[in-house]
Image (cartoon, rainbow, N blue to C red; front, top):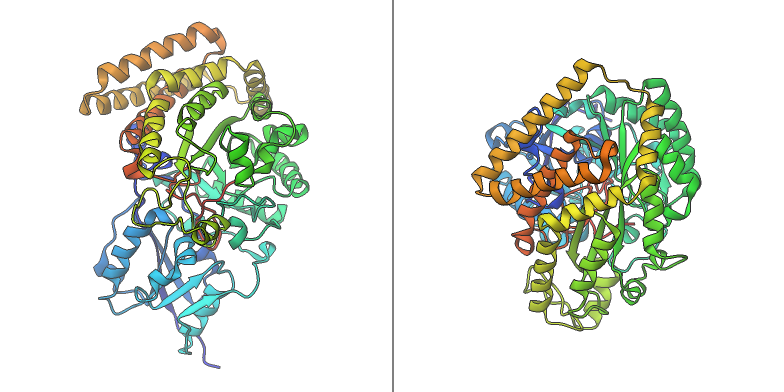
Length: 550
């Protein structure tokens, strides 16, 4: 058998379109020069799978421009992407066809819409690729025949997955690292393709694997990490085992990482899990709420949201544990009529979730929803924003109602009412955060406090310049000052700190900007891990695709 020759391999993550989660308006406000809010986990994960005979270069178009002349020097160029990156993927693949290289494509969008890539690349990877990607690279390096299409016969054993190559990233260009603990979700939500791609039985890495990955993230320079699991508590026993090991690691290393993740709403029923997450320094959790209507939830099989006591009670327990809640909502279910838009607004205001992302229902290929709508003759792809015919309203009414809802949610008074009232209305949240601060035990010197204040003032100045440039300084800037004062008046010494409040104002500026072009930019975007008009999962499939969430 011939020895494999040395290969030069480049992996490309295409530029994202703007969305709620891309934080495009926040990045210029932050210290340093940030190009992207979060690392797309596919790049370092794929790099780790490459055999030793491969020299791998990672190119994330969100933090650096592509040089197509330079790309011609590689043996293989791989392009991954989610649905939100579809158009840019096609543009890149079209440019690559003129180069003397082998072009591979994989990831979420290729996996759910393979036919669109048959003539756009040399090799396609469907689904998970922990086995197929290194097999292809080895065969190619030996000069052996390679397939045009690769798909694993079995699901990946997560305990065999190597530590992602975070060292190959330009880590200073990102704010948040992404990392995956598990794949799969035990629930049956009709719109979600997670269960069709990854299955209903969660597959997990071992705590020892995760500790190695935490070490690698810290070594790369990150201080914040998003666990991109489809549902972090899909296997509660294993999740608690990880959290106990993570708590020990945090204590030994001086709490170097703050965490966020996604979880189903039944997290609010597990006091032990909430306590372990607090002790492990989890700060935020994303929850798929979808709708205040029980009929809509039952229709889409989101039964975990209607079990037990009310969603409001569950969410309050989550918040009282010290977790900031982000949430996703969907409009367009068969049970939704035009009254749903007011109901969604009133519910979101009542529960006080500032970062609420709303999506129009999106039937993704491979999902039960897609199959049902196709069988009923209601799929209609002629409208890129509403790709089906709703039951109780027209497509025009759905799109218009969606736009109005998003704009109402991100009017300054509505947003800051949720933000400040949610914070002030939860003494449990403030107590939990104070307890965590004591546990971590970081004492700030006078010099540190002055430096933090100076940094916050610099961010405020950058934000003010951005508002001036868009002629919004008077309206939005005045609202920010007014709500800062309200925050101080209501909460006193426990008020949201100035630096945090400035960052929350920058968040609002981004959401406000997006909301003014909502249906043009991000129909379907309702999950955080990032940036897609159809939420997604992060595996080797390899980012996240999918309408799925916990």
